[in-house]
Image (cartoon, rainbow, N blue to C red):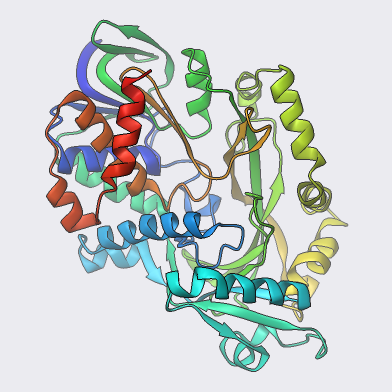
Length: 455
């Protein structure tokens, strides 16, 4: 089989499906193909069991800079705007409002959120408000019940609280893209890609497909293919796994914890389960599996191929392990999934900070929950990189999307499709994008396009 398409997207998770939706609804791209190696849309990290189901705004993520928070807020608002395009019967199953806060325990954490609140967050998020112990006892009583009265506890409560079934969101993008003529092929595994005179040839287990422009939206595998095609950019991947403990519903909403700045690993937080309102999940625990995909041990060799095993990579790993905050996270988290000792330690170190009165018999580690995120190692900086990364080549692009990649799916898709259409002189309806999904940052895109032309 050999076909030619204007755009080929490799991967049908939340990122790939959002790309197919944006390309088919807002551009003049005529033929679009999406290939997915599994048998369905969003089978891995976008599945509701494999993420925290949070629409991130940057308001309670205390490891974000003000600039990162503003960018995340804009991305999240696009998802809200998209939900207004759906019938209420559909959007209500995908996204729902939920109470959301960041909880500070102890004087040091309380002082930290006070500083964050006063240094710009209050202006960026006018609906964010401070809570003391008395207000917390009314709004989230189980965060105060059983707590030492002398222990300082406070919170920032957000008015931007939403939980999202990102798997269903991806299926919504897929449904709308398919109705516009986008072709999807499942059980189609990409083996490699080769440059051709007018684009790239994608070799799969189901034949060869040629595309004028190719975007890899393959999660952890995006960097694997980038390196295979010679686009290194001095990056490697640290696969970060996340597991969850499950308890009966003990909280009214999402309760996040204060976390270290500059560290991409989320502190343990508590979330209601969007598919089961009777439970609360605590997590994610942090692990470092030697694989690219959750519960797929056969991807270990591919994972090792994303490393260069040169001096910059080794120095980067030493710097990561040498960071005291990361080392502390690693020490604690490697024990949490273990039988017998894991649960008592998890309750003592994590759960007791959020719900002090939760008894051990009410909580259990659930192996059915949890995913893997591609945390990027920047070998130039010799450390982990915050946020997503895009590698751009000649009519080809590779998206590497750690958390909050699902929140940023529409933002990323708009950036990529506007970029592609501008580069290749293809028509795009900017007015429709802006009226339905929000304003486009043209200055940011121009810099990217001019940078590409100079390569």
